[in-house]
Image (cartoon, rainbow over all chains, first blue to last red; front, side, top):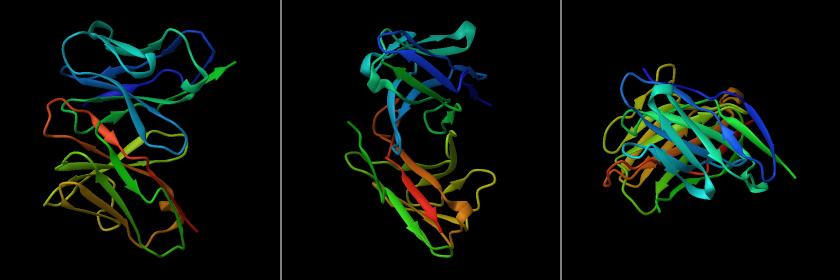
Amino acid sequence: AQSVTQLGSHVSVSEGALVLLRCNYSSSVPPYLFWYVQYPNQGLQLLLKYTTGATLVKGINGFEAEFKKSETSFHLTKPSAHMSDAAEYFCAVTLNTDKLIFGTGTRLQVFP
Amino acid sequence: GAVVSQHPSWVICKSGTSVKIECRSLDFQATTMFWYRQFPKQSLMLMATSNEGSKATYEQGVEKDKFLINHASLTLSTLTVTSAHPEDSSFYICSARDQGRANQPQHFGDGTRLSIL
């Protein structure tokens, strides 16, 4: 069975600083991996996804993530945080893009 | 891009009433849609997988008679919370995938906040 662990339920950064949100997964076979962002009282918006191919994946809003099989990780990064990045971020895993297993989420705060 | 519309976005009703939530894929066909429930400050939990033209598949612990799912067309799935009680208050989110295209992720609606008084 697959599972996702997001280390750190809250992350705070200053505007302009590096954003690093951690995600580790457990899967018996290579999974598909996703990062979603959720703004208050809204659904989830896809930031980026990894299925196959290049392990460094670029997404929307300047975010990127790297699939590291040896570390079973898929950490999300952004070089320079913006105030509008403040939101809840969810890492998710699936074997076939149907049944998604979500992490517990990380709330990102950005201070001016 | 793929758009999923969910309606209503917010509903308040008395205990004992039934509430219907609609999930529509606006620009693609979805033979499968998904219903999630999210408690405050928590992650999404899959409740059921809605299959067009057949019965939904419910996750363990989800009462199928409580949460009725109908997927009558390729663009519409409905979730009806029957005889709702305060413990059913939650944020319900649907998603769908454009299965006409390979390796497509799920696209989510904006959610429905359900408050039972």
